[in-house]
Amino acid sequence: MNSILKDSCVQKWSDKMESIERIKRDIVTFAEEKKEEFEQTSSYIFTHPELAFHEYKSQAALCDLLEKYGFKVTKGVGSLETAFEAVYDSGKPGKTVALMGEYDCLPEIGHGCGHNLIGTSAAGGGIVLKEIMVKYDIGGVLKVLGTPAEEKGSGKAIMLKEGVFEGINAALLMHPSSNSVPDDISFASVAIEFTFHGKPAHAAACPWKGANALSGVQLMFHAVDTMRLHMKDYSRVHGIITEGGVAHNTVTDEAKAVFNIRALEYDYMMELVEMIRNCAKGAAIATGTTVEEKQLDEIVKDVRNNKKLVQYVRSNMEFIGEDYIERDLTQGIGSTDVGNVTHEIPAIQFYVKLKENVGTHTKEFAVAAGGEEGKRNLHTSVQLLAMSACDVLLEKED
Image (cartoon, rainbow, N blue to C red):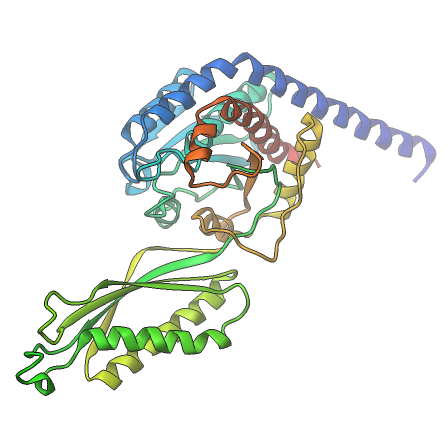
C-alpha cells in the first residue's frame, strides 16, 4: 500500500471514529433530556406491580410512551396478551436490532428483580436511538419488544416459537444487579412434575392389598440422591413433595413431586432430565406403582451472550465512565428466558449496578429499584442500550 493510500485509509478511520463518538455524545444528551419522563414511567410500573401474564398496566404505560415518540406499536404479539412489539423503520437498508423489556413482578415483594427498570430502559433506549437514527440518517429497523412473564412462564421462549424474533440481527437486554457486568452466564432450567399412582388400602386391615404412591416418591428422592456423585459440577437438582396423601390410615394412592433441574449447558441438562426420569421409573417398579411426568412451563436455556455485543457493551461502559467487573463464566446464578434468545440469534443480557451487595429477589432490592439508585440505573441503562444497539446498526459501514 503506497503512503498516499495508507494516509487516506487512516484519515477515513479517524473520521469514522470521530463520527461515532459524536453520535454517542448525542445519545448522552438525548438521554438526559428525557430522563424525567423515563423516570416517571419506571415509577408508575414500580407502583403498579403485576404478575406474569397480567402486566396490562405496565404494557399500556410502555406502549403509550413509545407511541408518543412515533413507534408503530402492536399489542398481543406472539399469542401473549401482555406482549408488544414497537417498530421504527427508517425506510433505508440496514440491520434490524431489538431492545427487550421485561415488566412482570414477583409475588409479595413486587419489583424485587427490578423489572420496572428493565422495561423502561428498553423503551427509553429505543426512543433515544430513534432520534439518533433520524438525525444521522442511519438505516435499519429498530424494535422494542415487550416480553412478559420472565419470572414465571418464559414469555421469550413462547415468542420465539411464535416467530416474533425472526429477522432480528441482534437483541439486547439490561438487568439491574449489584455490579455492572458486560457479560453473563446462567443455568439452563426445567421443572418437571412426577405423579405416582398406587392402589388404596386400609393401613391396618389389609395394607398388603395396596401400593403406596408416597413410597414411590420417597424412593425416587433416594435414587436421585445416590446419583448426585455422578453429576457434573454446577448441576442443580432440587425437589419437593407437593402431594403425599390425605389420610394417615390409608395407603396413599397418589403422590406428587416436582423437580427443578439445572445445568450450565442445555444439552447436559437434558442428560440430567433422563437421569432423573430413570430414577422415577425405577422407584415405580420397586414399589409396584406407576409414574407419569409433566413438564411445567417452558424449558429455559443457558445464556450464551454474543461476544461482539459483549464488547460493544464493555466499550460503552468505558465511554460513559461506568465502573464494571468481569463475570465469572464458570458459575451460574439463576435462569432466564433470555437464554433461549441467545441460542437462536446474536443476543446479550448484561448488568448495570443498582445497589452494591444487594441481591435480586429481596425487599431491599425492590426498595432500590423504586428509589434514587433505580433512577441512576435507568439513566445509565438507557445510554448503554442505545449506544450498543447503535453499534449494531453501524456495523454495515465496517
